[in-house]
Length: 319
Ligand code: G4P
Image (cartoon, rainbow, N blue to C red):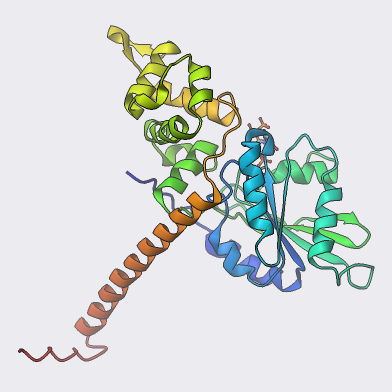
């Protein structure tokens, strides 16, 4: 079953970003380098269309470096877009951010036309950590829960460079099932919104195909890719002593171990999607969206006819 995730208050964020964007020169979107496509919010792309965009692949220390290079090349090939990779160990991230923003909007700068930048990202991509490093202090974290109003924060990175934090919380949007599983595995989705066993099985399915050597090394297994996802989870549970009565594997516990290990990069530096894979999923998701829209339109048309707001269309002539 696909993950269902309908956080509220997105319309408030949407409205606030819509207002703020008018006076913004560059939008920084913080992405999780382990799932750059799935951790982007497609709504943000719509709201900020036409604005130069800096994609920051954050948590690069956890991601597969070869795939991070692929993603950077992908974004750097898009018009009006630049990309760089970061992680919390970079002590002075401001330098690279400021440089990239001035490259994207070279007409800005100086006290008369200061650079105005909006920083956005779905929860858990490391935005608070980055902002704390930029401001050099431990700012209180607010606004992750629906209903909490987040005060807008303006950070001065230079005399002529202002960074604005997103007003409100930008929730992820699940486009296709795979994106949902990747977001859940990364920690971006509330714990109660998904089934750990299901997410671990999907994660193992991807890992055994793309990162079999690391998986085998971590759990002392051989020929991981020859096992079914269920057999793999069972073998991991057994190997890690996640057992219950009758020496049966406690699959819930085994699933938690796999997810925890992925988040901590104990399996190694892993990236769950390539630009090509994500493009395929996106196309699938857009097809599903279009089908859903056709269904919705048909229901709405039927409703309007039944309430006589519009006349019933004539029946097609029989042949
Ligand atoms: P957010 O504001 O976007 O929601 O994210 P936040 O900064 O709170 O970071 C979410 C989690 O990711 C935190 O871990 C944080 O320490 C971790 N994190 C942030 N940046 C990086 C990074 O570049 N690399 C790695 N490996 N981790 C990063 P946590 O376990 O939720 O909290 P804590 O243990 O740090 O308190």
